[in-house]
Length: 339
Image (cartoon, rainbow, N blue to C red; front, top):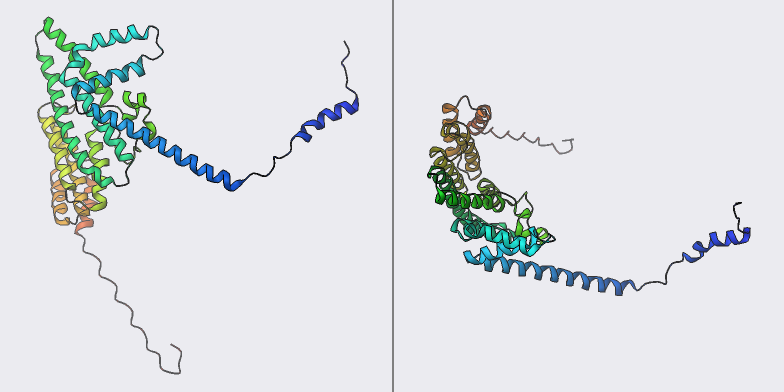
């Protein structure tokens, strides 16, 4: 079949048609549109703020009761982990039945409560421009976290020592579920948590460079949430945060509850922390205390990898300030002559 060709005038007309139609619209009322745009933006901000506050209220209400926290956790798991699955209702019922004893245990509920508490604290921090207001709540949370971590370390140790029988096997299964919950709720970022995904809270969480996002990271909480802010205001309590962290690690190292031995802590980890504490002492104007601590480090741990760093800092502290250069005398010009 021969190809068909349109008459020349018709082909030109078809080609020109889009050009003829591509004309601008009449002038818009820019002032009116901009005013309406401001209104829409303001309404959108209010809607988001209201949704954020509702989420915080829901989480805070559940965080005051262990049973309420467990119930909200189950709702979140159902919505996140079982949504879209075949036979969702039956699958969730099986999960809840299998989790029954563990979900009702005080250890499991403590993990949920800590997660909720830290999530609320994080949401409130993101909505505030006063980080100093979150020093005390972060320290209070850190102290409760320390107690919980210690109880879990003891729980694992006791569970391993129990005799093998039916009751022990049941307790072991519950303990494992509790430890799995701890891993999900305390050892991972709240941005990936089940409550955050369920309520879509990611947009309201603070940035990870200024706030610790992992509820179980004691070192990060003390450094980002507490020390960083204390340094800006030169809070004297800054030194005590190092003492707290070192005491926690020392207790766990000597009791065999850390992955590294007590000797490793005493010869490697603790000296590093003492040096960091000394730097904060200098910031607070406690130069003599800092010099004494670093001097002891230099004498006690000459084989430490940071030895050279310590020596440089100690020399910097002890070196007398260079005298100010005397100002050059100004020549007095004789009237009628060039200076």
